[in-house]
Amino acid sequence: MNNLALILYNRLPKTATDDELDVLEQVNIVSKSLKGLGFRVKKGQVDLNLQKTLDVIKKLNPCFIFNLVESINSRGEFVFFPAALYQYLEIPFTGSPLVPLFFAANKVRAKTEMKRLGIPTPGWIELDKPEKINPGKKYILKPIWEEGSVGLDEHCVFNGDDAGSIESIRKMDKEFYFIEEFIEGREFNISIIAGPNGPEVLPFAEMTFIDFPEGKPKIMGYTAKWKEQSFEYLNTRRTFEIANFDEKAMNQMAIICKKCWNEMGLKGYVRLDFRIDLQGKPYVIDINANPCLSGSGGFMAACEKSGMKIREIVQRIVEHALGHPINSTEI
Image (cartoon, rainbow, N blue to C red):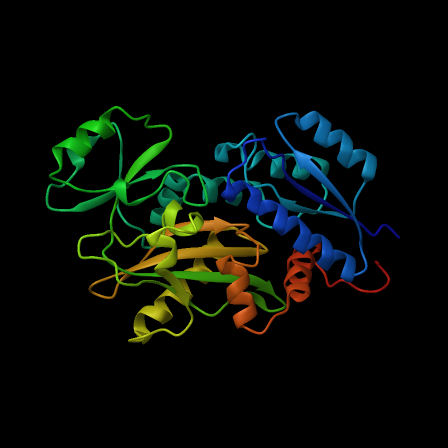
């Protein structure tokens, strides 16, 4: 019986940044868990030489692939290439399939699909249409493709009447950036994992911004996530103890999570990022298919808060990819 599991992840450049190096921790966590479940494990790196990856997969003939590819050649817009390869080879793989992965990776396409499905998401403007900017609103400039908040920090937040910011935006590439309405309010990360009875919404986590001075944008930007000595990193906290609990908003977010999963074809494990505005309305600001599995990440924190151990988390993800429970006859 074939019990070989192949972990594939993105080849790292020599100048890899902290957000890129994080994948190595994920590889170790998954590898240890798969071995604990009884699988033999092989690891491989993916770059733009997809023929080489195809040859490796054919030679090893794994029973499934654990897909940890977060980018290719440090480019987020290529993240769905490996999924296309796996589907071509008809080999089961973890996480979301090709089409949902593409939509989740491209933030504008994701927002377009959410709008079509009636899922609330902040309004947005393409860079070549600055005339649509409302002087009375606040906005945030976002990268279309990058994950891990790469290229996103407080300097990206601007007022609609800020002529200097708008002029600088005109010079940027519309293929890589877009403008989103900035939602003032609370921010939540909500994780979802496949379960025996369908998608399971895990405990809600709120991102709290401690002692931020008035006027400083409260966002989970690159600095808050990765620069450990920064004010933003030290003063941003994830908490599962939700203060001033808004039952209506929380129920709405749970419903939205399952709707995104079911109607956008998401699989395995997902994290949705929300903002709740000052009137209590929730908006999806990001869909993270195949979110980070490192110990410090929001997805693993939510799983552990629900009582799951790391091996159980990995097992659930694998079983959803295979379409049936793992049993001793397979391993």
